[in-house]
Length: 68
Length: 246
Ligand SMILES: [Zn+2]
Image: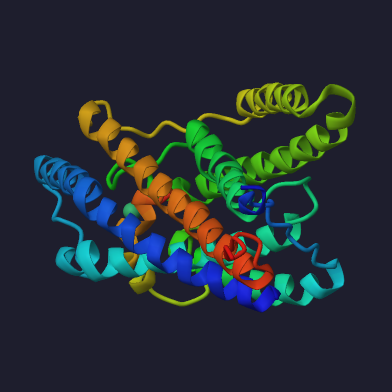
């Protein structure tokens, strides 16, 4: 049965300099996406009007972001 | 490596977002409807015309909700993958499934539960539009403090592990986390704009629904991401394939 013992899968360490470009670029895009759902046309506005706010309104409230 | 992890995170986030949408539709929307009915009644009693609709209620509660939850879920999944890529191999000997589950738990506590305990989710018609700037700032300050405390305490528990053992190190860090968070929450000002006659049950059910939606999302991301990463890792290194009997 010894050959059936499952070793814990080891996970490789990813060097920070390999991670950094992804973190900056991807992180920015993903935070911007969350901002549009959570706060755009609320406390601050990048786009004029109220359409984005009104469109994602239910999600914004139900995900717990401050709204009206 | 990083790219494929992020792609996995985005896909898992999208799928978990679909589950969260189901939860939002099923238990969240009925409470939103009740809050909006209260608002309409209040406006009518004051003799005010109902506020004009830019997006109809039907669109808000279907397509709008779907888009909002999916975009949020996908983005959280991508950020989760980035965090996973950073912590993997840096927090001790733990496999992908366990690591993803613990990371999701830490994320849910720091990003959802702790900020929500201080500034809970509110249904429509509860907040004052005039104070949205103030409330938004406080909410994100609370979230930033909570994330920073979580990172600090995870670091602390890793440092204490050799001296105290994993269990006691985690207990010390968890206790300190609660103390620091309690201090921050006592220092930050309260926000209470709930109208006196707003139905308490609707408020409570709404907040339960909000937490449930986030719980489904984070559990889906943590468990789904861990499962896929473990599968691909074991496929790569053939760790879990038993040698063929001869
Ligand atoms: Zn609102």
